[in-house]
Length: 221
Image (cartoon, rainbow, N blue to C red):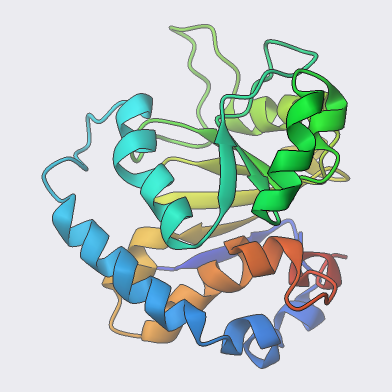
């Protein structure tokens, strides 16, 4: 069976993560509805999601629809004080948080109430690789720069298939992250596998459910 998640470098404390299936986020009924929607999306996009799909296609055909299906409020390609460190997506707890942030665009103030920033890469590409031909940094280094430029606590790296979560306190290590193979969770007959994705990457996972402290913060080392 494909490994659906990795708690690399113990981003989340092992003892705490062992109880993830007891959390309110895991048990939230919305996750089953979203899983079905994403399974249907994957079936519809089968012809587009091919190995040579570039980063723009990955964002358009998969990452954006996934975020929308999860009910995420997000904006695209926001400017930061460091133009070399622009997130592909900026995630907000609620639509009202985005509206409040608009007057502060291009400043760090825009990101003051953001749950996470996202850096996307070509479909299925190696998230550990250095693009020497293009002179680009590793995805881990890119998300660390975006985290520093925006001041947010959480950064996500994704190639569409795999989604990695980094935290500001350890993102500079580049090897401490939580990763879920989203495609494996949708193709696996064990339906609870999807909850390893939902409990952490959903708006409730990153922003908190019913005013509670977010699970991502509760599980930190």
